[in-house]
Amino acid sequence: MILTIFSFIYGPLIVWLMDTFSPNVYSLVILVASVILIGLNFREKSPVWIIPFVYFVISLSTLLFGKTILLMFGPLAISVGVATLLSMRDKTPQMIQTAINRWKFFRKKHISVEQIRSNTWIWSVAAWLNVVLHIYFLLFMSKWLWAFYVSLGWYAVFVLALILHIYIWQKRKRGSEE
Image 1 (tube, one colour):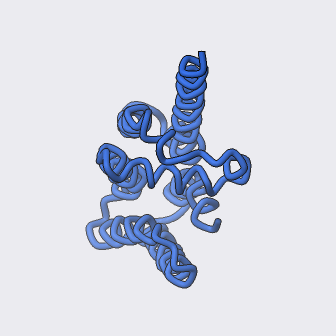
Image 2 (cartoon, one colour):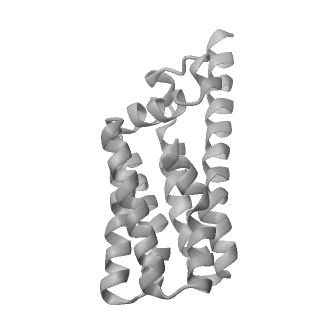
């Protein structure tokens, strides 16, 4: 839960910190926040400790090398990792089922691994589209538009993938019943 909140505020926080403080200060803020998140995820035995670890490495690199742009690459690095994992056909269904089942609405629907396996390509395409959009916003948009995309915008890509997935599944289900 805390990691989700951190992902919502990461982009705007980075932009605000970059506009307000020196690179050493905002690198240190993200470094401390990522250490706290790593600790909380280990305490909860959560496998997503790798996400705050990526932020830790990037903020440490920013602190050591003074390259402020590195902090903006954190969400992109995580997106590349997720896209790579979702491209691994044998791992994708279980990962998606775990993510979907965390939402109470879908937990009641009992979305099966078989249902997810039928459309893994949707999730892989969505993940790589997300990477492309991250790069686009990072290189060609203002830092505030980048902040919006890394905080909320990328969710739209995956919600659309979910809608498409459900639509195709329902269409196949109706076709097999006839």
